Length: 276
Ligand code: COA
Image (cartoon, rainbow, N blue to C red; front, side, top):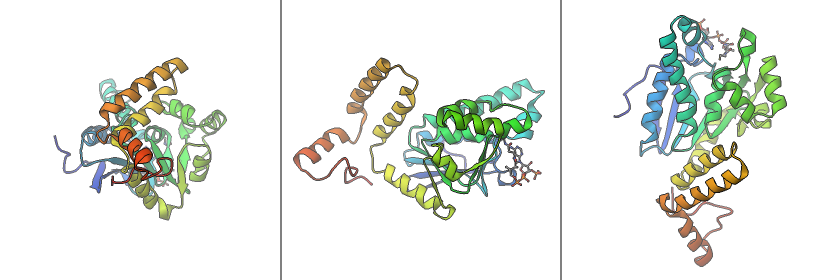
């Protein structure tokens, strides 16, 4: 099945190996409606196996990354519709955590503006997050009488230092991209004018490495966090062994040969030459 020519709530542009996926409800600050969740589920399912896509970037149209769940369409309109609510919640959870966190290629959240509440889940599901330093982050749930539900409290507790997680979720105070970088919620905060260039540079850098090795590495880091040491050791051993067969570029043995025998590069300082 090919990507639909267009989606009502999402834009997809594929260019030079990068899929630019844009949440596209700028007039509602890209609040996540059920329709947007259904669209994203389809888009991610399709792009996951698309051979032309080597890195995925998630961003928002206009001046917001996303204002979180759509209070009107995702919550109030579904309060008395348990079946529809269930469909919407399933789609929400599947795209913004399971599909994104375990996406087959590296993912980068490009945070171009407001990032509130439910938007923290896809933010943290992405492997990297690069924010405009004036982007505005907020866990505003407390201001309208709920707690950060779905998986928001979980990702906040996992990705932010505990003091900051409690501070920002209990007060609902906003913070900017610079603070998000300082507390480790995003990988990097850069001036808005450089945001797209910075994301593109990272994406191109990632494309110089073996896709299988990238996938195994990002999965390993996510999985071992909740494993006891012995289990992590066993898991990593098994994963490492499987990489020898799964890495289509044979990076390990070629790397050994080029470093130890040919002395053509320093793996500590640069990727193996020859892959673009
Ligand atoms: N759900 C539903 N609609 C939303 C929304 C949300 N989360 N966030 C914004 N919108 C809608 C507004 O209702 C408004 O719609 P309207 O034009 O039909 O009146 C439109 O988007 C623009 O919002 P507005 O508040 O005028 O834009 P702003 O740029 O002045 O402020 C925000 C932007 C994000 C600061 C503000 O809209 C806001 O506080 N949104 C709620 C954020 C939130 O609490 N999210 C947590 C949800 S889990």
